[in-house]
Length: 178
Image (cartoon, rainbow, N blue to C red; front, side):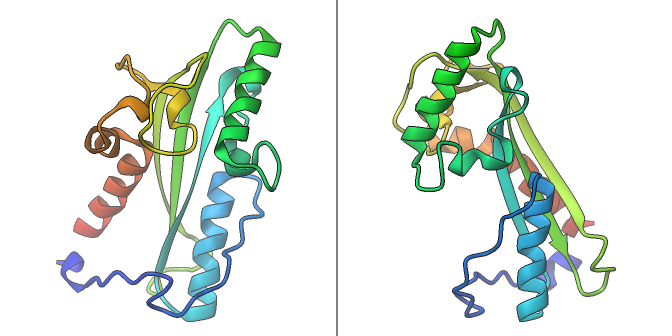
């Protein structure tokens, strides 16, 4: 089985202290760009991801700019405030949103110009106020579909089982299981 031959290495393990590039216009482009950087510079098979929150009333924003939505020096508290203010200003009837993760995988035994992509997404709603202390990022304002609590109000085990990242990672694992 292929999965028995896999050894996961961190960036520290391979001596990569570089800031990985994220200059793409999509989550897919950023995930591929990061994986390609490690693949080309260090010669390892590599997977990398990018994630973002996409809000329907804001035409998919913040999306690829989720981490720096309120500016390059912003933290997630500033990003959340900006997002909630923009939603209030649009007076949007819908607060529909989704968290999305894309994992790009580059393998030496495959065409490096044809990365494998694994996507996970979770639909939900944006709250009007910050709720909860768990998690990070936009977790305190995102209620996943089928729940009445934000990601930040959930037990970490539950959030980690149903999250967009978990869905994408499970698809990656399934690929290796064959």
